[in-house]
Length: 264
Image 1 (cartoon, helix red, strand yellow):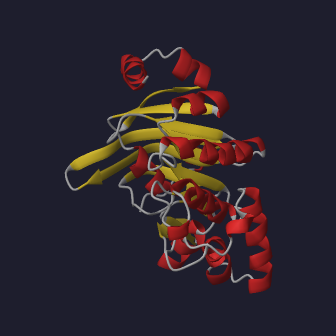
Image 2 (image 1 turned 90 degrees about the vertical axis):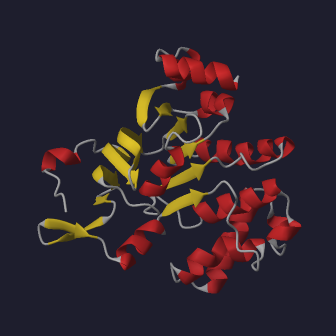
């Protein structure tokens, strides 16, 4: 396994630090050398056309996909690797599972357990992975459901909730363990238009609280309003990145200009 030199571990302010990341599925290279840095407390947005590699990038951060080359750091560890003496070796499954529990993930399609109530969904990781006492987990879970405006739906099953309510439960679950970073993979794309606002409202509050977030979205106006940085990914590379002012209002790359004109 590649052993990074100390120089590779620069960017000390970044919670997520990605350098020259490459990922292929068989012969098809999806990520072609991605560089990205998410600082503590930052809301970093990833925009781009479908199939450009955005979701694959998030799945690499959360160890749901492996990568072939480059480096991907979350806090002080190299994703997919662990220390053995003075070397990095391939991470054991138990190490990966523990790390994954410290990264929040909100999926496009909610991914709630259908046989669990809203409260049980929120606290499942706290009880099963974190081994938190059930009474303490329930208290934490109720606080989180109140935070996302769903305390009165604690006993409801996913089938009894709207899409927007299910996604708010998913957000409560993602922040339950106080993760270092929360990944959002197009969290509003499966919702009816009238339900989008309630999910963005919860995300807006989390951003105000200084939660570190990496967000893949087509909600360009939301990224422009609340984002700290924006990355436009095109065909597996970062074509342009900077502040929302730069990338969304005054894009310089022809592909960014074309993409924004098309979706507006």
